[in-house]
Image 1 (cartoon, rainbow, N blue to C red):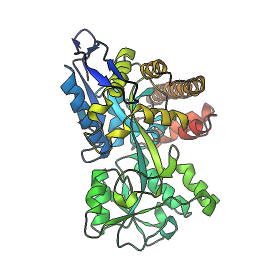
Image 2 (image 1 turned 45 degrees about the horizontal axis):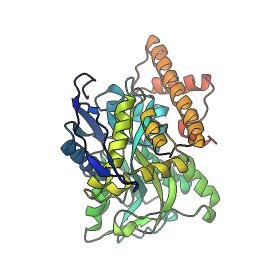
Image 3 (image 1 turned 60 degrees about the horizontal axis):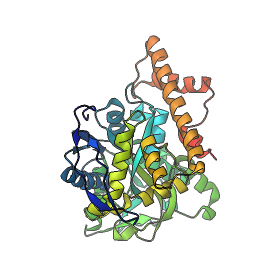
Image 4 (image 1 turned 30 degrees about the horizontal axis):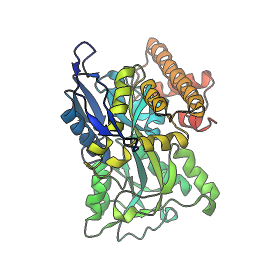
Amino acid sequence: MRNIPGKCIAAAVFTAGLALGTGAQAQDSYEWPEYFTVVTPIVGTANHSLGVAWTSEFSAQTESRARVLPAPNGYSRALWLVTGEGDISMLQASDYFDHMDGIEGYSVEEGGPADTRVAVMNMVTPWSYLVRGDSDIQSFSDIGPDTRVALATSSSFLMSGIDALLAYNGMTRDDVQIVEVGNYGANTKIISEGRADVAFTSPLSGTSYEAEANPNGIRWLPLPAMEYDPEAYQRYRDIMTGYVPGETVSGVESALGLNMDHAFQANHVRADEDEEFVYHLAKWLDEHYEDFKEDFTHAPMMSVDSMVAFLKAGHLQPLHEGTIRYLEEKSLWTDTYQTRQDALVKLAQDRAALWAEAVETGKAEGLQVSPESEDWATFWSDYKAEHGIDKSFGELVMALP
């Protein structure tokens, strides 16, 4: 965890071109923390490589040190942020929704629903279904009882991706041959090795580039148009909340041009993180965008342009006040964004407060707050229902105007 103010040191003053082409501007003198920690997915993922790219440049240009800490799974990324082991952590909307629902590995006392905010955008990442190049599977509809489906249990959104594919065909995990894997990398390797037929992953990941270089190659199942089978598509979309469909323009060659779901992957901070730190971090990343955008293939997506696209699409997570301050300074924040921000903040604060109340009440009744406790899962579900909550957090967010 980074040092508190008082153990800070002055950063040098640099001149850099603004990412949006607004000309050279001197970086304000600011006392950066001595160090801070950036939590990323595991080594080999695009987000880890991006984290290394920008933090290396940041540490070289300031007297502060940004430490990259790869987490073994999505649950740890949220837990380490909430508990302060990390100061910044990558969460895409589906991660955030599951975290705020307190399900699966997020169902832990210290790492359950909490008020976290978007500080800066990471990438706009395509997600889809990977098959080997010599597979007979051509589309969503080709998934059947004999299909061997890779299921990565390391993150809830990876499991949801599989559930959504099966739901498209009116199926569940019980209707196919599930092959469980323990981490994100194995989720792809098992396809190349021929031990599973389909997996949910991203064409941006290093593991996908490795798989494409395999003698058998890889292919991707394009997202069907809603008009093709509206009922099937709705079953899929009911599970795949927080994604935006579109043409894939980044990643392995086999994915380019295909229609896939895309996730805005953002770096979160705690809501009570120092506003000055978040403001200056957003400012530094914008003004020094040209310095790190060539350091990693997908680094160009870590831009203010991506943040604006996130806002225009209807942002799904609240932004930190320091970030909003910088966007206001650049005349990029609007009353419409603020209205949605207010609604998102209320949802987040209400849910975090409800979780804290439920934990206190449940523990008083002798319950253990744990993903392995069926009694706790039932209690938490009932507690939400008693307080008028009959929808998932993602559904509540998606229902906002």
